Amino acid sequence: MKALRRYVVERKVSLLTILALLLAWQAAGYLSPTSALRGSPLVPPFEFIFGPALLGMSDYWQYEALAPVPSLGGEQTWRGAFLALGYHSALTLWRLVSGFVIGAVIGTILGLLVARSSITRGLFALPLHLLRMIPLLATIPLFQFWFGATNMSAIIFVAYGVGVVYFVGTINAVSNIPPRYIEYARTLGASEWRIFRSIIFPAILPELFSSVMLTLGLAWSAVIGAEYIGVNSGIGRMIIWAEFFSNTGRMALVTILLMVYAGLSYFLFRRIAARILSWMPSSASRSAVL
Image (cartoon, rainbow, N blue to C red):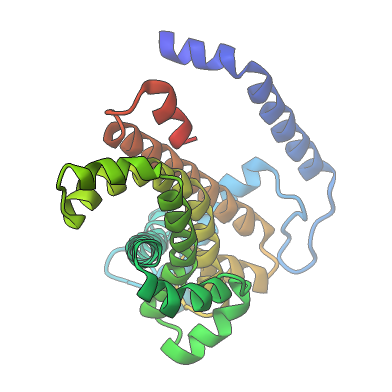
């Protein structure tokens, strides 16, 4: 309770601003006209979002064994709505996590190779720097043609977007290591592997974690973009299904759900990063994960 009270006091102005925005949205929902297609308000109030719009999510459930399927003549049910949200959310999270991990690992490895080897620097530096200048969402059609509208296509697309950021971040992190650290280690007879394991990797770890705050947002944009345009399932696809029929309530509900997921992912990452970087001074570890 004390921690919660302290949090509220420290962020009183921000919380009041959020409350004012929520009240303004609710007022706009009462004052806005209604769409002629589905009787959906142009600005849906919260009782519409968490009432008819949430119940209508059962339209996206497809497995009759667990709940009625409206597309097959079944009725809309709350069970079907929550099952549909859980199913499509799980697919999106799977694509996000898989692509993020693959992109972070490959981007970090390539960044280390370019930063520590003149040969790989000559081979990969310029092409990879050119790749990161290409607008990410503009490449979605190419990934669809190359890999199809599949899970693999979305995962590779997320990995590509995350990987180029980690590539650049790793190069910058290595360049910020004071050269005397490596010189001292070599003077003491340390091998290249020992230098990497004991000096380079621990030194770049805080900067790599700070890059996650940028790449998490990028990864969410990439996975939603891939689902929105091509993949036939997931949270992004639910938005376009709602858009086809002007279901603003469902679009708003999915947007709120995405905000919750993104916020939880940032919170979870900060907790993990704080534990891994517990060896750092407290002020430095906090700045590394902000």
